Amino acid sequence: DKTNTWSLEVDPPYQAKIVSQKAQVWFRTETDSALPIEKILHEHQQDNFRFVERFDVLINPTNNVDIYWSGQLIPFLESTLHPAKITLDGSAKTVIVQHYVPQN
Image (tube, rainbow, N blue to C red; front, side):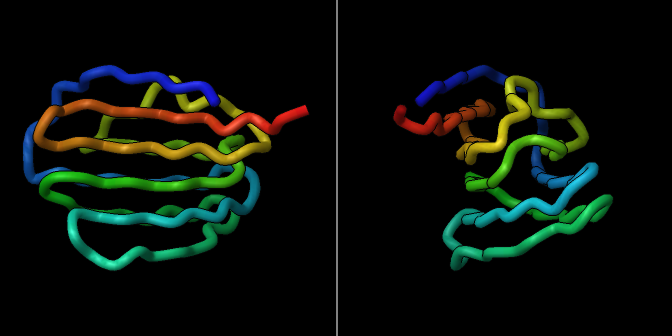
């Protein structure tokens, strides 16, 4: 696995946006204390979320997808055919991107 962590200058209320570019993408979100949501976005679709403390998304694949936090593109989301977990932490104003790499 490969993990990157960094800070972003964002102010509440927080919004997250997932945008599918050229292909469909599956994702599972957990927002604050809400129940998980699973969804498939098709080519050129997007979905928006609001959160107070924390937004977690497991996404597969990570190629052809952009994720925004309150209008800012999340960096370090590598374009691969493998899944990644992205955590937006509102209290710490940090982003954690964990890329899953298959074992050979």
